[in-house]
Amino acid sequence: MRTVELTRQIDASPPVVDRALDPASIVEYEGSFEVFEVERREDDWLVVAGGSGLRLTLRFEERENGFFYEQEAAEGQPLDAMETTITYRQEGNGTRVTAVSEVSMGVRPTAITDRLAAWKRNGELERALDALAAEVE
Image (cartoon, rainbow, N blue to C red):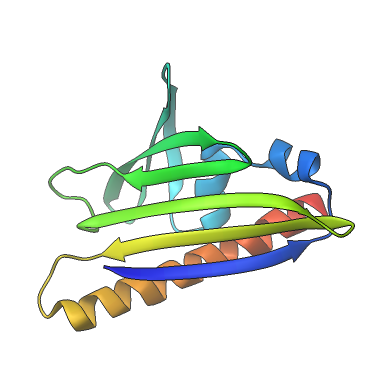
């Protein structure tokens, strides 16, 4: 598994950032997949998303000041494993948002394929933070 971490200072208060973040918006902010379905359950959400003939299910948990989400394990998923935590906190007059993701393709040679998955994941998280900033600033 490879870890990707990005941090962005956003010129908006934490309550404004909080209102802009939900499971569907996070997937949309990342820009790789279209959200097909969101199911709110007792303790979490399931988001079915996809694009280009690919479908995946992501399970989200709300955390204090953010979200944790992971790709549900199922045959045909694009990655062997992916989990991400997005958190935010007041910093100065704005909000510091941090995204940390661990990703693995599960295909040999893993040193190369996991690096490729991390590179793609880095791009998704950059897009997500850019889109969040554009939404709230």
